[in-house]
Length: 125
Image 1 (cartoon, rainbow, N blue to C red):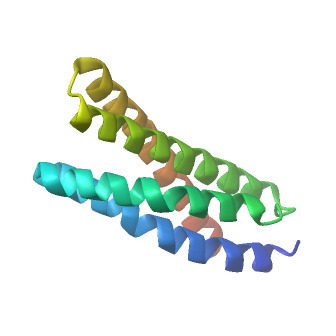
Image 2: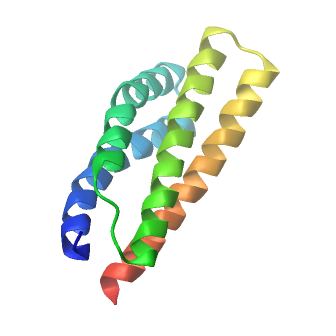
């Protein structure tokens, strides 16, 4: 697959995922439980389809783009997992659910940020 074709397939998926991640982060920072639950449920409902679309795109030949894809996919998967823990926490508040939600969310955020940074650097070359 030509790298330009992969980038054209990746960008719309990135643009679908980004506002969902941002909305969860925004609602958590504002500490409004109702908005957090809504954002988590919306992300949980929409993110698996985005992840599946990403996995369906043929892998690029260039190593850096393959790495970006791998990191982004892993970040999306972990973000979905963190949404599960967040929803569980609000349904049954306990230390375990809260800790897992925060830890998995932090890991996912780092991976998504790394993929974004590396992709931006790639595009700027």
